Image (tube, rainbow, N blue to C red; front, top):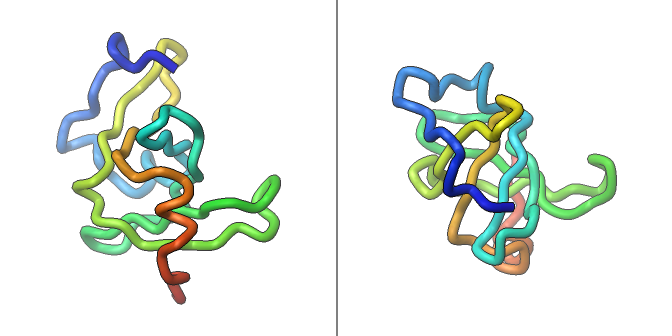
Length: 94
């Protein structure tokens, strides 16, 4: 996915209600997971699984995600993490 024409979200838009459920794209521009929820300055991303079943929640700093809207207005994020790197992280326990 080419993100160059996507509109970056400003700080006021970075609310849990808007960000939760956003697709996360990794360093290789492939989908790496979905944002489950925001906990302070930490993003909890569900990685792996199929249709949400068997996904592993991992915690990454919110600052590692660049949130934007695509042409359809859907919110997503880009990170430098790869899917493999996220899968190797310890599971986040709520």
